[in-house]
Structures are given as structure tokens and as C-alpha cells.
Image (cartoon, rainbow, N blue to C red; front, top):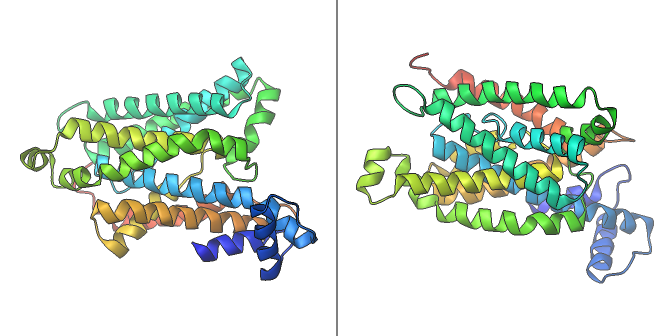
Length: 320
């Protein structure tokens, strides 16, 4: 993480030296403007680096929670429809309500993500066997496709809303703002604490509901709190950085390969890994898009798509 932070501060349209990075950080901590142009560039990059770390950590943690709750190796906020549900409500807010504040974005994203998650779970629970991993994945894919069509239907006749939405839709941290981060930080902190407290119960759920009940776990409340934390983490990030895909999918898999399935290790490591991945993706986007930049959401999708293909090829499907 330390390396990713240094790279994020040092690299971009104007590369700077380590000395300028130090000067920029010192000036920022001292509440003054740096003297050198390189140090000033570092000061300008600090907010987006902090947002990349926060958003990446939240997405990695959210993905780990959703995979644990659904017992589905390809579950993440994007595949289960949470990102698209949040995006639809934000689009409707932009188009019909004229929302502009970070709190309005956050509220609508949270409501939309929550409703989408509930809908996917209800649809995936219909029929024999309840909410199996395969049914949840299929329900999430169908819901994502339907909600994406609604987003397009709302935007196409409204040029002004499309202009306001198109930069947000890609997903990135270029528009980092301390005021916006201050609004979402309490929600992210509370959701992260709840997620980590749910880790022992999620370990029991991995053994099956019957075994978890025998171990004294209240299965319904464990799923409810873990799911609520996952949706809150994803919705808050979506509100400030747009629907960034694949971080919540690939990071928990790497963490699981390195540290095993114990959620007490898996969830914190997923948060750290997500922070590193998004910070590095943002840095790569600035380098390959010179003199402009490629949004971090595009870079994570480019990296995450092959990961999804590998997971799908290695997963043996017992039935369709």
C-alpha cells in the first residue's frame, strides 16, 4: 500500500521526484501551499489518492461480504446488480430531481443498491433449493441487464442529464473532493466495523445453514447485517466515484488464495488489496492516457475481465 501511495502521488501527467513528494505532503500537512510546481502537483493528487484507497478498500470488503453471504465465487456488487441499482436511482435523481449534493447522491445510491439487492435475493430464492449460488448469479445478471436498459431509457431523451451522468458512469476518482469524502466517511466506517464483526458468523455460514444454527449463529441476522454492510459500502462508493467494476470480484479471490477462507483474515486483506488495486489502476490510467487520463473504472474492468474468465473456466458446474 505504501508503494501504491507513493506511485499515485509521484506519477501522472507531470512526474515528480521523491523529494517533491515529501515537500508536497509536508506542505499539505502544514496547511500551506507548496513552493515548487512538483510539490504543488503532489498536493493536488492527495485527495484522489485518498479517495482511491477508501473506495478500493470499501469495494474489496463489499465483494468479500457478498461472496461469503451468497457462497458464490463470482458474487460482487456489479454482478449482483447493486451497482446498477444505485446508478439507476442516481440517474433518476439527476434527470427528475436535479440533485447536486453529495448527500443526495449517497442517499439515492444507497436506496437503489438496497432495493436491487433485495430484488435479486428474492428472485434468486424462488423455487426449490432456495437461494443457491447459481440462481443468485443468474438473477443478478438479469437484473443488471434490465436496470441498465432503464438507465439508458431515462438518459437518452435528456441531453443535460446525460452530460452530468456520463463522466460519473465510467467510475473513477478524478473528481475527489474532501467535502464529499467527509459525507460518506461515517457510513463507510460504520459499515466496515459491522462487516468485520460479522466475520466469525460468516465462517459458520460457510459450513451450511444447519451447521451454523448448531453452532449458535442466528443465520437470518448474520446474513441481514453482512448484506446491509456490503450494500452500504458499495452504495457509498458508487455515489462518490461511480460504479467501479471487478474490484470486489478479483480481490477476495486473490486474498483467499494467499490467506485461506477464514473471514477474519479474508475481509481485512480484501480491504487492503482493494485499496492497492484501485490506487494502482488510477495511476496506470493517468500514465496510459497522457496527456489526458483513462478513468480507473476502465482500467479495473480491463484487468478484471480476464480474472472473471479464469474463474469461470476453473469452476466446475454440477448442474444447469
